[in-house]
Image 1 (tube, rainbow, N blue to C red):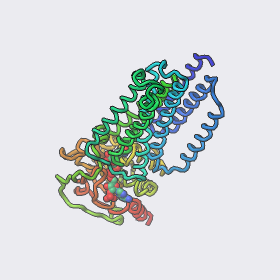
Image 2: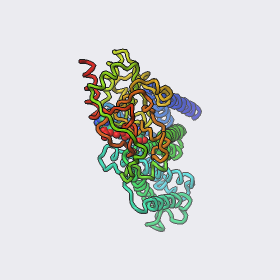
Image 3: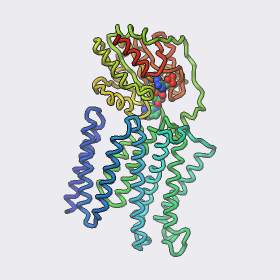
Image 4: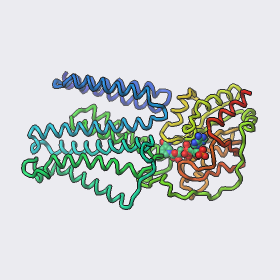
Length: 474
Ligand code: NAP
């Protein structure tokens, strides 16, 4: 196939990626966007394969068949709630695939006797690919373990941690320099067996694996979604670097898309939590060492039963449902959908107010509510619902805590201060569904629970919502 045609087809697939990514930003077009990006990827793969005359097709077909079976099984069998774990694993596979591309290319140069003659820039980029791919692989495995609670999700912190990590980075950078511009110093393997290019390359791979583990263990399970988004970005950068290694334009472009969109998502999540990326990566948030902050809490808690909550809801003209992590824990999304339908049948206007970091992954609430068939047009963003909060008759807070904590607005000393919240405290009546007065992810007490207009419906969110629905049915 002529080069000009190959490049033209690569440009078409890159355009399909751009349109696909754009459509992923809206729930209503996301599914189509995914399909368009997948067509772009298919076109890129077919073009890459068709343009290479040295391909061993049996390997390609075997890889495609195996990958398709694993992908189809994963899509069918993995529960919606386990998506973050699956994404973590897939990022890791992306990282290791890029590392293997770098290794194969290194091996080709080495066994072809070109170790001393190959351009230093080729070896530099191979080293960078191995570094990013290795960190992404082991970092993602740890993130997967923490999210799925296969390993302890608490941050692992020890004295001198930053120094150890910095030392590992220095050694890795040294190894990359040695195998690229420093080759004349160490030789290709015949003169100095131990400090020759190959052992240094292997050490680079091992150290990259170790670094991936070390940078993720100090981060708590609750912050893993941010880490996964960051690792997703790394896997894109690793693929981009691999594209430079094998000189494939579309791999460079698609890797850059994944790398940059991952960084953008990481940034959006940090902003929505009013935390910096360095705070997420290095503060050990969630290690349980932080004091609970109780300043400014006045008033008393007013519990309510489902029976007594019923007339309030029955009389409401409009209701705003604000879900949070507790809805996911209780798996209450179907019960919530049933309650919202009953309210609507009763003539009440019902909307869902979604905070961008409610739950434990970006879009967590959207995914759960979509699974329960709540129509997209009822899901409204925080910035959409806040201006009219005073007009809301009843706000139902289902297992949310930090994302509705007014201390973020009112208490300058609160660690949540500055984090945008859904201002449910401004609604006429608030009913909070949770099991106790325990704090949420940030470990901060919530003055909302003591508010004049707040009623606490204690218990598991799913059973409480079902009891309320039963009241309507009765
Ligand atoms: P949250 O602050 O963690 O609060 C969740 C609440 O759910 C808890 O207070 C808990 O109270 C309640 N709960 C747990 N199980 C329940 C059950 N079975 N039934 C009823 N209630 C239950 O959750 P959030 O308001 O959704 O806030 C999310 C937090 O995660 C934020 O701090 C955010 O910054 C952080 N975060 C989010 C992301 C993301 O991507 N979304 C990423 C990193 C961090 P009880 O124990 O009293 O029931």
